[in-house]
Amino acid sequence: MPSASHDGVSLRYDRAGSGPAVLLIHGWTCNRTFWQHQVTALRDRFTVITVDLRGHGESSRAKKGYTIPAMAVDLEMLVRTLNVPHVALVGWSMGGMIAQELARRLGDRVSALALVCTTPGGLADPKDPNFDQARLDGMRAAVQSDLKGFLRGLAAQFFKAGADSPLHAWAFHEIQKTPATVVETCFDSILAADLRPHLGDIKVPTIVLHGRHDALIPLAHGEQLKKGIPGATLTVLENSAHAPFLEEPDAFNTALADFLLHKKPTTAESATPAAKTSPAPTPSPAPKPSPAKAAPASKSSAAPRSGGPAKAGRGAKPAAGKGTRKK
Image (cartoon, rainbow, N blue to C red; front, top):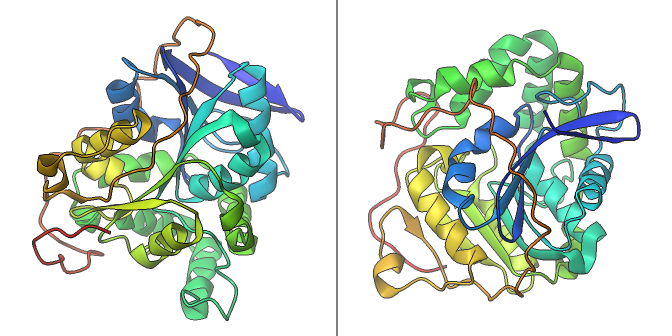
């Protein structure tokens, strides 16, 4: 099992495929197995790297170092340890915040940036239009008083159908593996992070992918990223909540791969009901990394395939009206 050590922490990672490197960064309480659909879809054209953040999955349970900058430093050291000359960053939720910070640290080494259901932060800023003190207080109280119940509800909010999603039980099982101290500390780090002043400094081609029904990090945060990052585009996955790469893996993988391959959507592709997108900017070509033997992906806890669109249930917002429009 490959791992990389930094600052006394061992980071568990997998590396599969060949071609330009893509680093997939999971979200709060989750682990690298959440990306299995993307590994399968991309490894024939890319070197796909998945990693467990410190304290998550099979990585070390460090006592400290759970700020967004500290976790970005972990991944910076991983990229340098793997001797990857250029890398595309794909970050989901908290992982998207880490990806924004990592892009600043790696500079020209980053070939492209994909931000999935994430935010530029400032969540504790009363002046931010997305500020909701009552909601934040409620989440913190739930984490401290009934972690299992909180995680059950958190997993439900990953999906448009809530706890009725066929993926809910699997996701709930996976996120319970994260220690309570890590869950709470990372929650505080998410609230403390404010990347808004640095959005204009991101100069790499960027796509924002967001689920229409995301209640954890509503679409307004994705629109804020698109507005703040020069040249960024926004693709909305119409039948997803917080985890579109699990709920709509085919539409998500197509949008992501087209972006990474510098392919602009055709008229037919743009009209696909599942996703609405505007043409992506053209990333600079990423050199092929040094050949490496692909590490086998973990199978024991791989994400199950979604059984298709599910009926809206608990925790789901009313579905948006049909039709597409470009953003």
